[in-house]
Image (cartoon, rainbow over all chains, first blue to last red; front, side, top):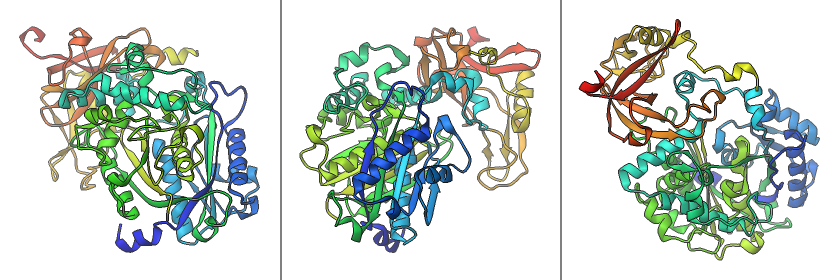
Length: 393
Length: 142
């Protein structure tokens, strides 16, 4: 990105409203559209704006209600008339990439206030009775060998990291345990009321060696929404704005053939986001980093520049990653302890990042909420999108 | 659970990868290679993803490989594999540099290590399907 573009996009919009439904283990007959609408209406109300103020909508796929014209279906349901609509299909990077697109739309005048909403239901039986459209050429080479979805890929990444750098299972497990500690201050988290120690993680069943059950994200039903608006409007609203200071995206398909399986496009995505924001990893006071697996967090921390490649294990060991710690990470519990509604599960990290910046995180409010780094990761380290939020513009 | 879901997932044998699966049925490994870029193309497709040229050659490779990384699957996601655990799902790197997803057989799962030298096993499933697995290389493996 050129300096001109960076300067033109930095701090031009802010998150001013947010809503998150408490995740549910079973959808109990609710549809994704129903959950999405509930979250969207709550987020608009939270922002202090009205339905008529919203002139932009960004959505992502709902795996259990996959449909063409999805943005229009959601807009119609909410009664929105828009000048900008977008459908973002970047797997686990969808949520952060939705914010990047909304911020760009506002900065370039295509919309003044944009609703970003994601939600999904989860029914494991449904996955096999009506498989989602996941057909692609590589699948013919993985499915016959028992590729256990993303579990196997992230386990292979963990195994390679351990082999090459001496990373330990305890270090990986600490990520899950620290996040669970923060989740005890989040009554909505699926695992609220169920503390978890490193030993507990290691005692849970191996799913794909070396990843244990509690190092793997918990799919659920739920929805989250945020409202972004332009800088001039953001100042006059009810809540202190969470300024969107920077965003950066990087896509690199074919993780199996890339030179090093453990060096991901997060490197480029984070660098772009930090460059736009004019800050670096050392300025970050809280992080929300895509945690589909503990191994994902470890590798993203390295590639985003919080430590050097290979030093993720010692890094997580040396820092208290809880909301009260010296490196607050995934302070709402992350997806590992909060739950992951569908593909857009990364939105809980966006919501928590904004919530912390706004100072609205209650019992789990971090001590210093100046700068948040929020990162989404899709596929097997394929789609990456980083955001930087700030308390000051 | 519908019956179709309990069927073993198998390659279609059609489309861009058809020559690969046909060769595997014959006990050989072939991959498309772009002569202009000196690049093996995987998964197979009609063009080179580097130069977009469409003049690819199907080249036989040796099958010599090592384990790039692997995982012991204790809980499968596809119903057909659920009673086949534990098994080793792996990424092997061929001597030619291409990495293939596969299973490692002929060795207790917990003994598979990164770097292990492996060789192909052509596992005939039925008249139309043969899968390419790998096992530890060496005289014992033949």
